[in-house]
Image (cartoon, rainbow, N blue to C red):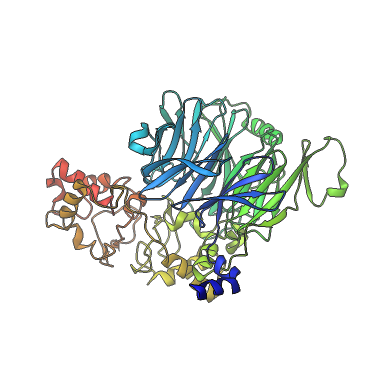
Length: 623
């Protein structure tokens, strides 16, 4: 022990820097102090902007995902299989309440008026409504379960606490449908009745949502996939673009979508959106570049009403690349990588570098609207009386991280600057290195034959790659992706880092497993069916990764197919890879197995009883 301690004293930075912080969420707890949710370090840090240092911390037992501040409390969602939500008292800086046993809790909101805690169960695609006074197992605190759409990962409660708006990360429609896009779920907080507003075609990756201080306008940031084209170029946002949707509560069922990109430079992967408490300034963080974006609220809202031309309901508007170029100010921060977390008050705007463990601190001032600011013209943003410095102070949260190959690969996977004109990154079509629920017409196997996005989990262990097996292995597919989809080849060292990151991916436990990881009785019966002769499932989905590594013709084709046989994918994490088949034609496993009769030429699945069908699906969703 003495020898280890001596080594730590000799090399404190290198030892510490292997434990990255990963600031993912932030909230002001007073005028100058931030609570920072550090995903990789599994803690909440309290950081003083005045003292420029950490002034406290709360350790967490599991990896956190989301954090909100409500009065003197913080609520944090953590974990996967046996996840929990914890309540942290800010003055005492300690955990005072827990709601446990929640699979992958994500988005959060709390209503003090109704004493209700809303928790998005990411892969159950629903929202738990819990009694704020009753801690312990979530089943004991349950008030109701409200259906969402798909992966409810961000929420905002209106100031009057009448409505909850929920951003669903991904689309929940068959990928060959006429409209492929994400939805916003709207919950009546009193009655707990939900409705779902689908956004215009192509809107995807709904990562964050907020509302104006008066509660009238709701803002959602997202990507926009031009998924009906051939991915032959990126120029002008040909393949992927990036946007923000504004919902006006006085114009029900309408939406105003603005792409935030410039004509020749994308803003890849908008990550968070916030509005200052005075309602004057809106800011966005751009996860795929080193940028924070500012817009004056009154100018933005006036533009929206002018562009919508007085239409009050049941109509969506879409404004393309360059729509906000004259309205917004882009600030690039070379010292920041992976700009995710964002916090605002009336004195500061602060954004954080997820991969660089640092903060960019913008100070705000108020000046008369008609004065001239030539002294600040090169380093300030001034519209509608709001003055914000655009040369932020960069503050480290700890020692500069020393990235491993896996971490560098993760950085490259999220970096939009590694594509032509910065229009997208790998994570645009592969959120968390998984799927986006869309079909794409790639150039690797002919054209006009759109195919569904595949998960990258275990892609190195299950060659060949791509749905038609056109890439010999994942190493070849990764390099081809940067060359033919990003149109910016990299050096071999970077490719190897991306390889290392993707090889490090680990699955989330199946959603139908018990909190201790064991199978339910229904899943055990389904497992026997899966491996038995009555279904024949394991004849192709065999081995550790549930694939025989071969191409098969399973009896389903569409009119644009130019191939008969398709890759046998792994079934691990099957619960998060819908829709199913090479063109995403089947939305659910029930559709795939019992309507599409997947690979069942002899009609064996038709002979299963309703209970047996339920058991088989239960097992598949536990993988």
